[in-house]
Image 1: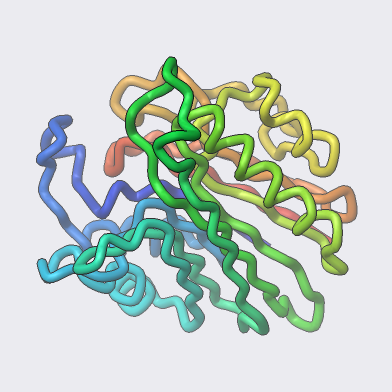
Image 2: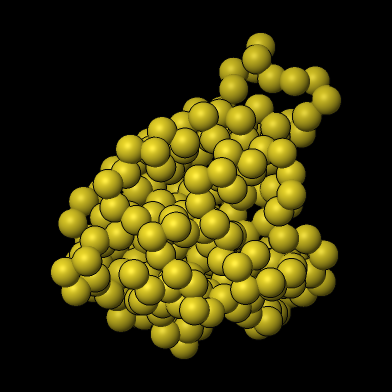
Length: 245
């Protein structure tokens, strides 16, 4: 089974410009996702609803254009006319879908020393039937601030602990590999990058200097291959793994 995680930055094409106003090109993203030739791909920073057509229903458009029959979506930040979240695309049937909101701290809870950018997040958990074998795929996008990350971990660990299926957990964690916040994940799952001794960076795609995107798997699964792609499209690099039961 081949799987990938990719923060698509709302389908902005950073190969054109590295500026924040990089143009949106859904068709180019779909072609790139299709070229990865993976069975399952988890996407972060996807516009699910917008009055602007390029930002509306990005997950569904990518599924159709890239040739994925099954899709699961979860809204993180719902701003009324705009909503942003996580998407999982699969070539195998998705048997169940759950989403777990992780709310941003209220203003009076926030730490003075932390970044001012707070955002509601969500954990997307699906069970996929891979030719009769079931695997739970969990995708999320951690916040930038420490308190946000702590809330995310507190929500994630019970989800991992009670799963009856082997787990693939992936996404943009906004944390480096050996930071303390990720220790509860390392206690439960193994990093595909670490298993294959891959220390390449995932961000930014046009000047990589840090690793914040991950694929973790449970001990019941083996990793045959792990790769960080080099192409510049999003500001993140895509991460791929081949795993087996």
